[in-house]
Image 1 (cartoon, protein in one colour):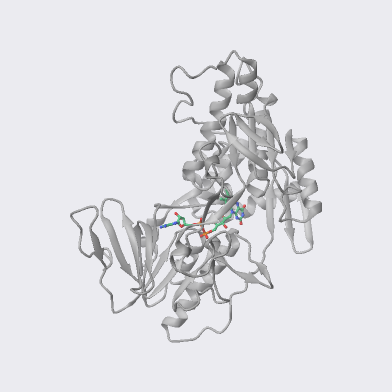
Image 2 (cartoon, protein in one colour):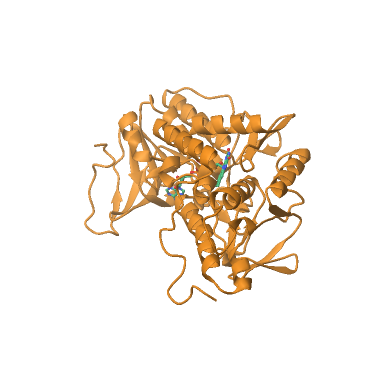
Length: 447
Ligand SMILES: Cc1cc2nc3c(=O)[nH]c(=O)nc-3n(C[C@H](O)[C@H](O)[C@H](O)COP(=O)(O)OP(=O)(O)OC[C@H]3O[C@@H](n4cnc5c(N)ncnc54)[C@H](O)[C@@H]3O)c2cc1C
């Protein structure tokens, strides 16, 4: 057992336990997402004790979360246990805990461990890789009505909401209520909103065909709303136009340049009009986790920690922020919050720390290498933008599928996802159509 995990075991759940400082330097990484795992991997040969802290026991491949939300894949197919790293990396130990505080003066983090109180984990180097959470742009009251998509339980909640809405539509006698149950409103037309809308459109037309005697799922309304002037605003305009046309062909109503004013249990009010809809999904904004703010450093408007060109916090030696939690500028533009950027930043910091541990100075600042952005729209169609290269269609969709399968965390995930995709491609079926709990409470099923 690692020295950090072998220390005193508290009797009381609230006890604060201090971890002893070691002769070997300790690198604490908070967050087992893309950035945290890349940093840990880059430190695999380092003469240091690496402690990886995450509040979840699994890494999530977020780019395929929308497929869990639309029943194509099941949660385990896009997740991998973080603890498995202890087998592969001898200098690493995993701690399942939520970091709730950081003291730069004492060089410790407060790690709240389930059933074991708070541990003060001492560090010599700290890598904050805590990612983001959904942001409702100051309207947190929308949250209960419009779940965001950030983790596996969000994806399962959305899946249950979508499938449950069809069940409720099939049981109600009220025409207006049936129409409301069969209206799905997605707020935010970035990549997540576009991918979710495309997948949902395919599901209502193909997967659910003939599944209900009393309703025709193909008549469902899918509305994609955004306050921006076009879908995929971070892509070039011609790409956005193509994607909007493709979505409309799939039956998605695209409404851009429309501000959402209210979200409640009836639906949304947008651009002054009410749109009744039982399922509203939030695919709009994200904000950084609260940890960068705890470092007492400058943060940007989304709460991301502002770092120097070496991804360090100014005036805090050995403290780094990487991935979606970091605000990194390159050529006067922000480095995007995408998986590739998180991996490259995590790897860079891991290598930098490994060199510093050997007493070597790193002179080359971080450079983000943009491999391009992709978004998939329903079956057989994806777009790719890389520098001046812009392309879309079936071949791009094949490239998208290939790249995503290869990027999955474990061989097991790759095999299972390929299998599900092939099954779904040729049969139109989706094997994860589960509603774990009934979508109604007794007596409320029909309005
Ligand atoms: C639905 C969705 C679709 C996406 N699609 C794409 C795509 O197609 N292509 C692409 O490139 N990017 C995509 N992204 C963005 C990409 O997933 C992120 O850029 C990437 O995950 C960022 O990696 P990260 O390591 O910074 O953070 P994350 O992957 O979010 O990991 C953060 C980790 O920190 C842990 N954590 C947070 N706070 C604490 C705490 N206080 N204590 C302990 N642990 C904590 C979390 O549990 C999590 O494991 C998508 C994101 C989402 C949500």
